[in-house]
Length: 97
Image 1 (tube, rainbow, N blue to C red):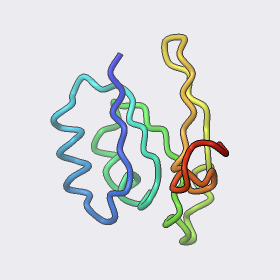
Image 2: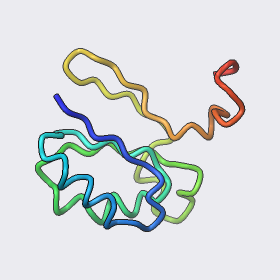
Image 3: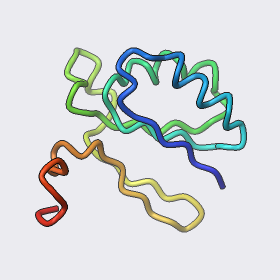
Image 4: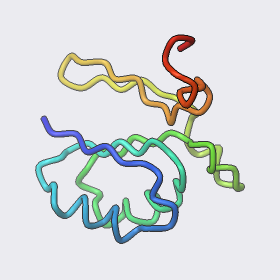
């Protein structure tokens, strides 16, 4: 099972689209925030994929409630914790996480 992980596109829908086109075997797309609207704009063209979205620190506009701050994804018996990281202070190290 191939999972494509992306984040921080900041308006570069073309880069997200290119990544999806280059990874046709990826059945899951995990978008870890910062410009959720990019993922929302591209997702209809790749509706054969399962999309998993969480908010980032720059996802503060009116559509932000369409995705959680964090989520848990279970794929083939593996659990993945999805987060942008800003609420867990990852810029300051992993000791407090």
